[in-house]
Image: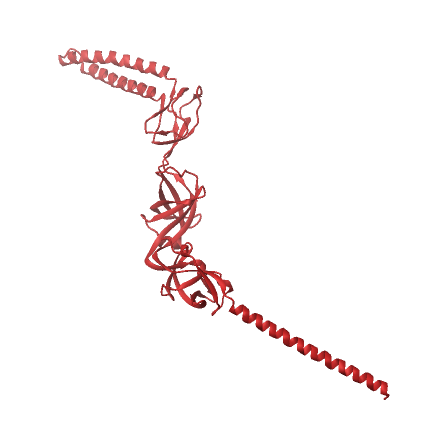
Length: 363
């Protein structure tokens, strides 16, 4: 081997040793940097929002949606035909039962009533005269009885004519609000034509469908609350009045009828409502926000804050109502629990806690 080749091999070996040393040095720096970052991250507090459990009555509820209706809703039909000569009410007016809503041209009916009255008066005078004659035996009993029957027939004819004349005034069959006016001034209508529609909105109702498996939770007299899309921030009250004893074969449910107090007049038939029916109550229960729950591996837990760090604690829950749940085991009631930010936590994490008193149960 020549001297030149020996020098070349020596140079190559030195370069390889230098490269390996650099690589080894570089790896050490990277590992140290990662370790330092991990230690810094573990030492930096994680901002979280916390709340304290509260004591309150909590209700188990059943949620349902349906459309509000009116139980007192009646079409007002004309009982005789004629031309509309007066309109006495308009849509939106409140009317009492028996109040006149419109008048038809009743002149012909009035004359028929007067004619029947004249015939009745004439026969009644004749009957009174024959009563004296019959008492003295001057007329036959058969003739007198026939006269009596004629008088009763004319009395009925007069009463019918008077009734038809009164029917020329279209009256409200129930008290309520005029929901629609279906006739116009000067229009000729026939008997049985719909002239108005009246709805009593002071008390509304809703039909709720209850699954067979849930039927045992409900009974007449239970209270409920509801909201409507038109006023989502307002809650109204209702009461379960009755539950049908038979099942609806179309959907396999029972029908519950709920009455809604609408004394304020804010609700209207046809509104879509969301009902919440309370069927069970736990008094003075320990309650926490649902957002605090961590559910993994068939276990429910929360993060509890103490001395600036968190510990994960398994709990047992009971009734769930809206955004809150009842805790029946695992918490004493004075712990500060994490309600926001727990996705970044693990047992022992350092936290910067911000307490939110508005997270308490509103019940």
